[in-house]
Amino acid sequence: MEYYNQTSTDFILLGLFPSSRSGLLLFIFIALIFLMALIGNLTMTLLILLDIHLHTPMYFLLSQLSLIDLNYISTIVPKMASAFLFGNKSISFIGCGIQSFFFLTLAGAETLLLTSMAYDPYVAICCPLHYPIRMNKRICVLMILGSWMMGSVNSCAHTTYALHIPYCRSRIINHFFYDVPAMLTLACMDTWVYEYTVFVSTTLFLVFPFIVIVCSYGRILLAICHMHSGEGRKKAYSTCSTHLTVVTFFYVPFAYTYLHPRSLRSPAEDKVLAVFYTILTPMLNPIIYSLRNKEVMAAFSRLTQRICSV
Image (cartoon, rainbow, N blue to C red; front, side, top):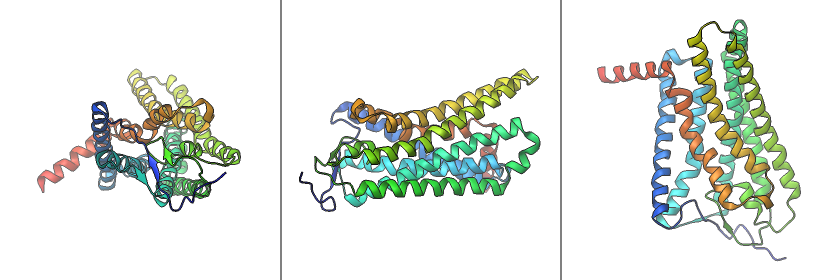
């Protein structure tokens, strides 16, 4: 079967927004979410950097999560928005590789970092006497470096393989970014080997970390049941439930998309699920993990007073 030289032909991303009034309203909604994510994550990163009271292991990990989310959502939304506003839906072969590499790197790093962040409250509540040993600055740095390195290696392998697949069908990708499942439908070769590697990577980066997070919070909830303070139990239950909600929004749609057989999925379903783990989660993370936190709000108040006094 004949296939075209992918280095000389651009791909076409159909995008998320239909060419109608509803598409414009959806664009405005996504743009507002994007601005909220940028402001929230940038504020959290600067706040943790500038306030000495937040220089603890948990907030150090939170600052890295905000930094990842800031870049993560910026990898997807600006290209999608420019395609809608200016009508240029094409993306070059090199552009596909760059977007795929950064998307997979940041997504992989976030999945592992969220696992590290679940380990922190587990040690604090279940093994409080060991906390200074198990969650010191050196351990945090190793967790962060490990997340970035493993995410980069995984991304490099998948991006390199995907860009060497011959494409002989339409260059139209029915998605709003260069995603692996959407790209495989255009290949003119048997991709079962690559799909198997996608399955393995999804299991290692999504399924196992999600199980670890759920088990960590389950152990935390068991420890909370033995608390004598009713107010402390209520606060801990509220914190754990909100954290698990955001984690579920990120991991479950992501894993479902990458593990579900191609024949049982539709492009519309893939795009709806992708909105959860590419757009909504980066906006929700600073709200759930940080802005609802009294220590963060106190730090924000101190920073505001310093700025006003200057």
